[in-house]
Length: 476
Image (cartoon, helix red, strand yellow):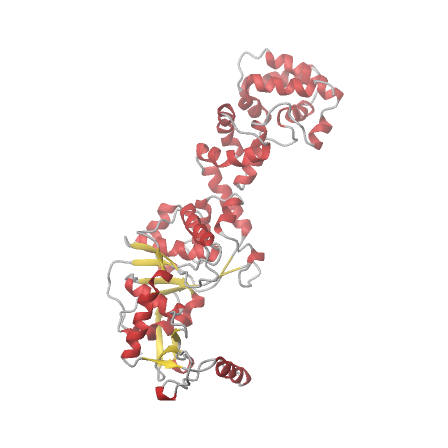
């Protein structure tokens, strides 16, 4: 079968999710590839909400799709298209095919269709409609039965899908049946709606998962029947779990908003999803600017990719270390406020900003960053955790009280001056530095791990540091 492909017009891609749930990780990658391909070629990226499944489509899901795309930085051109609102246009094309003799009414009952499926299963064949109403006289139609409308698909030869990722894929027409265009209630099917919308939106490239390959062969038959040019297709491999099985929730196949809430940065997810199935040499860290400059379909692989959350964590750690400190403060403040139970004032934000360079070196996620930073803004008196409390015995409280006098007299509240004062106290009292530093850390942070203790003193400032040390040094 000869496919009439579209001429080399400006690139127009689309992302067309069904709003029956969240924007899952596979859908996010499809959106990313469509967005990158359009932007790389100076084209247009459109968004279509395929909301024809009225029973399962929800406003909440639509909102989450919009928010997920915006969070990832995938901006679309123009207003979103809602497929259900265009049902009349879809149905009109089916009626045109009926008038042209390229489609027909099918009166097969549900029982007949079930018998066809059962026979095919018994004979080891894929279930398919047997075309019994294809050339039958409409006068034979049973009374009172609302028919479906089916496409008269070609029966001889094959359809060749010249795929930009998979290469040439052939589908014998003997394996493709006459698909339904209009249901018995007159509503258009997904297959018809997609083709009409892609044509009327002037889509030049359809980039989607390779689970749609058979759909593509069937849709090409519909394009030909309608007399329309056919977009170019690129079917990208699916994402699998680390065990090689089809991705599911147990593998971490969550919505994009879940990855945001787990503390991943949008640039991390863009970079990570880009590398799931696409490569540029040995590059692992790929900025958005480089992705836009380098992305094309010829570097998309044909094998499924595997979701690896450990790799995602490491990549996020990289982007945190490279992140702008003020932006990271904005991201952690709401999380910290939820942890500590009170607002973060401007002095508190200032401490977080001053500490961020050290904090972000050790964190893999925004959640970890918030957890490691919250002690900087906790209100006094600090409540040490169990391990920190064990360090604040009578001996260490006495050392803290003595150390407080030395620190209070420090000529400047800087890391070198503070370190010299603490070391001098330890030496004078015959203590190893750790014997003094660990209780000091417990007093200042309420925990046994923190950034370097002299950095903590510097960030907290003279007044707050001395107050926390005094609280910890007080018996009971």
